[in-house]
Length: 230
Image 1: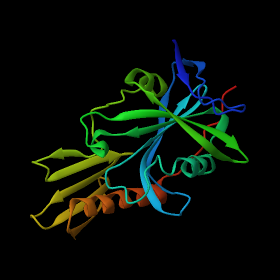
Image 2 (image 1 turned 120 degrees about the vertical axis):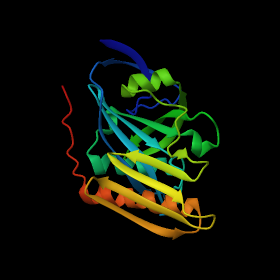
Image 3 (image 1 turned 135 degrees about the vertical axis):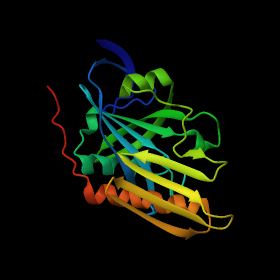
Image 4 (image 1 turned 90 degrees about the vertical axis):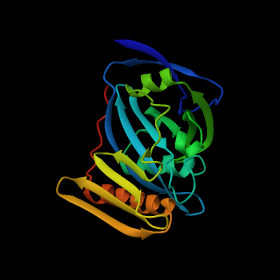
């Protein structure tokens, strides 16, 4: 199966208003996902939900904002974050499609949004970002999965007293013990989980859970780059 779609070219020369046409063959697959920490130019630490998809033409990377992010948003840190991903995962900057994703709970809206980010690769770093909105069909063709525009990152139950998320096979739960105390725990697998209580707010508990997810990914996950085809 061959599908026509559009993405921003990251090769030089660079035209932020030009959409290049490529052909996507059947075979897109999710390779990896985690909570990924990053820093902006001012060395402020943030974190995002990272997903890497392998396509015959290269890689699609989704950077999702998460509720509980303690620092700069993915948009605010996009240049340094994208450059870090190239080094960390041995990606080809000229065969990369980069998407930003804001789930509805990060926007305070019933529907989330995706944008394609075009960047110029210059002197081993990304510069000059430009954003282009994407609809659900375009996201589906780039990832092979439903974009779930109405799905929040944190699923809520029991009248806003229970929140959970699943990333890379790990599950984090944040819930209220009382009006003044929250608890968080993260389950890596059936044999291991960690938790902490005594948080004064949901935001503090979410921050701890995201940090625990990021630390577990850094400690236990082994990344092996996939050779480019061709």
